[in-house]
Length: 176
Image (cartoon, rainbow, N blue to C red; front, top):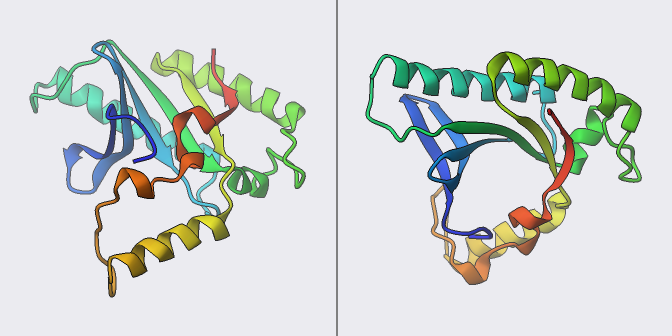
C-alpha cells in the first residue's frame, strides 16, 4: 500500500513455492523482479542474486517452452531490496550508514559480469527502515484488526508505511 498500483506481491512464475516477492510493471515492455531480504538473514546478497537469477531463468523457460501464457516483457531487471541493517551485516554499509565504496566497487564488477551473461540489470537497493518501528506498525495493525495467530490481513492506504515507498529506496550498487 506504500506504492502505486503497478506493484504486485508474490507473483507466481512456476507454480509451487516459486514466486517473485514483488513485481513492478514499469510499462508494457519492462518488469522488475524484486527479491526481499529481512533485517537479519543468513542468506547473503549473493544468495539473493542467485534466487533472482533462478526466477529470471524460470520466467524465460516458461516463454521458450510455451508452458504458460504469461505476460512477455522485453526487459526484466532484478532488484534485491533489504534494510540497511541487512547490508551492514555483510559489511557493505558501516555502522554509521556509510556505503563502503571499495567493497561496492568489487561487487559492481561481479554484478557487471553476471548481468552481461544473463542480459539483465541487477541492483541492490537499501531501505532506511528500523525494525522496531516496522514491528510497532505491524503490532498496531494486528491489534486494530483483532487478529490472533498468523493471519493474512488487508492493509488500507492509511495504514501504509511511507518509508517503504519506492522513492525512498536507495541504490547501493548496480550493474551497467
